[in-house]
Every structure is written in C-alpha cells, then in structure tokens.
Length: 181
Image (tube, rainbow, N blue to C red; front, side, top):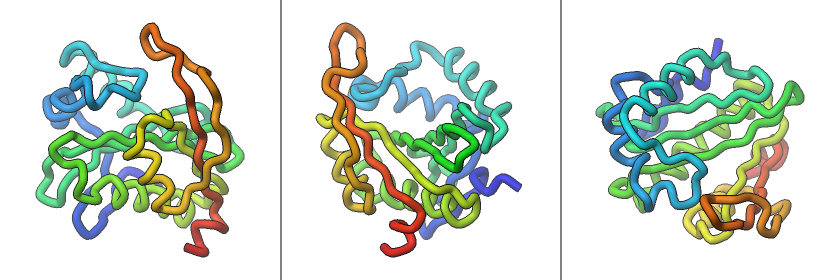
C-alpha cells in the first residue's frame, strides 16, 4: 500500500493531488512570489490539468518519478503541495514543497514536511531524504534546518532560472538522524 497517498496530522491532510484541486492549485502556483525559486510556473489551467493527469498515473517508489501531494487543511481547503522525487531504488528521495502565500507563517509547511519525512522513514523504510534549495530562499532554508536537515553542498551558479544563473544548496537527513530528533 502507498501510505504517501494519505497522511494526517493535527491540522492537515496530505493526499494525492486530484482534479478537484486544479483551480486552487493554479491560483497559488502561478503567482510570481510562489514561483520565484521554482523551475515551473503554469501558464493556464490546461497546463495544471495535464500536470495532475500525469501525477495521477505515478506509481510511488518507482525510480526517477515525482509524486505531487496536496496539502490541505482538515476542512479540505488546498493550501499547498509537496513533491516527492523517488531518486532510485536505493531508498533515497528528494522533496520539494510549496505553500500558498496566505497560509505561510503558520507552521503548516514544517508540519507537512515533517509528516511526509516521517512516513518516508517509518512506513517506506527510506534511508535518506534530501532537498535542493536556492540559498536566497531564506524561509525554506530555515525550515529545513529547524526540522533537522544539514547542509551538504552549495553549488555556485549551477542552474538557470530564466536568464539568470542561480546557486543551489543540498540539504539532507538520514533515517538514523531523524530517529534521534
């Protein structure tokens, strides 16, 4: 069973992204301040529909696939999403997360990320979880450090975002480190 498809916390429900999410997903995902540090900014609702349709077909724990999960308040309102990149068959995943601006600053991102990481280590027996982040994305860097990730690398001007070369930092945590927190 894929336990990534349904994770519940005190305030949140993390589940598979579905077509009923498309309008709310587009509403925050197309905002410049949300996409500032991300490589994808949807141009229209059709692009969102295509993304969700592809996501529905993803078989979790399959090498080199991404699964996008909806982060919802318990009442059902979509407030963000978490992507899980199943890197390889060696029990490693990469995560990425996005929260709508009006829901930032309430601890929702940390709560959701911690729940997904706990599921990865406890339910799926993953060995390592990593996250790639632009060092200028201070909120994301602070979140990762707060929940126990350590900085492993800082790559200088290693990827292009539009017409600009950007730095990339890799943060990670191992299962044994997570257990000791």
